[in-house]
Image (cartoon, rainbow, N blue to C red; front, side):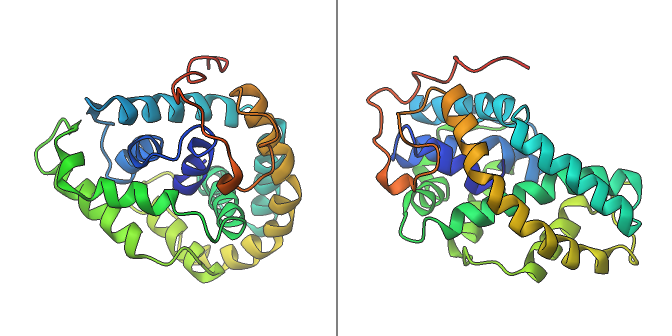
Length: 237
C-alpha cells in the first residue's frame, strides 16, 4: 500500500494523528531515499509497526497478487521494458488503490491530521533520523502533502510514477514509454475498483481489525483502545 492506503488501515484501529502518521513513516522515508527513523512517541512507534505488519499481509493477498500479475502482462503487451513494468505493476497498482480509497472517504480528516502533526515541531523531537537534515525534509514533505489536493487525475498519476522511478537505472522509464502509462492506468482503474473490497477483506481478517470494516469507510471505524494490539499478529514474511 502507499501513503493513503496505510493511513486508511491505521484508521481501523485509531484516529489519533501520531498513530496514523507512524503508519506512513516508512514509506515517507523511502520517498526521501532514507532508512526509516526510530520513534520515541509510543503511538508513532505503534503506527510504524502496523505499517510493517500491513505490508507483510498486503503483498500476500490474492487480490493484490492478481492485480499485480495482470498489470505486468498488460504493460508487457504495451512494450514497457521488464524492469520498469515490474516496478510499475507494483507501485502503479498501489497508487490506484490509494485513489479508490480517497474517493470513498471525502470527509475523513485522519490523513490530514497525521500530516499536520508530521509537519510540526512536536513530531520532530519524536523521530530520530540517521542523517542530519532529514527531519526538516520529512516535515516539508508532510507540509506539501497536507497542502496538496487529494483528488488526482490520470496525468498526475503518470507524473508521480515517472518521478518515483527516476534516477533508478534498472527501473527508470524511457521517454517513449511514458505515453503508455495513461491508457494503462485508465484501463486498470476498473479492475482495481472491482477487487478492492476483496483486498480490504483479506487485510482486515489477517490484521484482526474490528468486525465489519472490510469495505467500510474509515469514518465509521470503531477505534480500538489499544492500537498496538494487532500489530504482531499478522504472518511474517
